[in-house]
Image 1 (cartoon, rainbow, N blue to C red):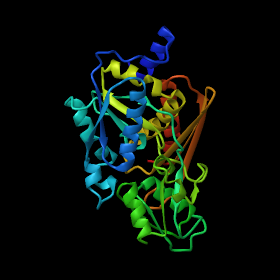
Image 2: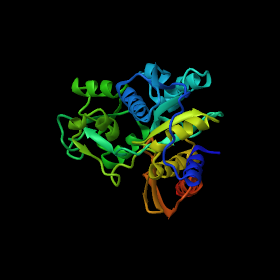
Image 3: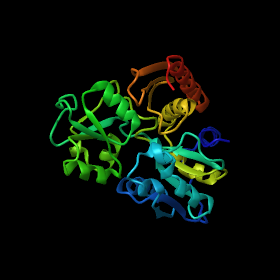
Length: 324
């Protein structure tokens, strides 16, 4: 049974929203990258579990994605480079859970792993960061903008084809340092990471989703476990946020159906009002030879399967329009 369904069934059968830790429960070990943002995320989950009586420790790790900084992710193996070592720790029993920025998690998890929890989403939007120019649209012609994302490249070019878009790798602090050193006139980062690290003052403005559609899962934290650890699913279930989980499931389904790699310049964003989920997606040509292709679908959603089906419909609409 999938974690989402297990949580739903547990709450319906027992009427409980929490599960008390057993006195014999062994400590929960969280595998985490050692960047400041990744540690914040892991410590956030640690604090929530400890507040409910669990003993929790962190296992800090350096991933390949953290080590390879001179090439774009699309050329060295994709965003999975940020999670492989953490999954190895889970499979070897060195850790019990791994906390990820969901936009960095591959659309297909390896056999034997699953998402046990998607937490309430932070701001999913992109942020314009610059000490020189308060507005992205106010940049002079030929200004240099830094981003590590093919999605952002095609969306930024659609907005301002006259700008120079340059690669930007490294953790959040490294990217801000490169900006402050004058290597770029401005950079684009996820608003969620800046807000979590109390760096909102660095944000010149936030792009509305109508202008810059976010990446699938952006702003959401996902917790990964080995399949079959129902004890962990139930321990984590008070942190699960159904609305966020359904929205990101639809977004990730678009990406999965389109090929699911970080070399795919794809954006997807969903919002849920009541039981109606509105999903928008955009695909762009990284070579700039064709215009941006967009698709949108609205439908009733109650289960993960509903959200994923809606995502597949949007992917089909993109392909019919020439994406891919």
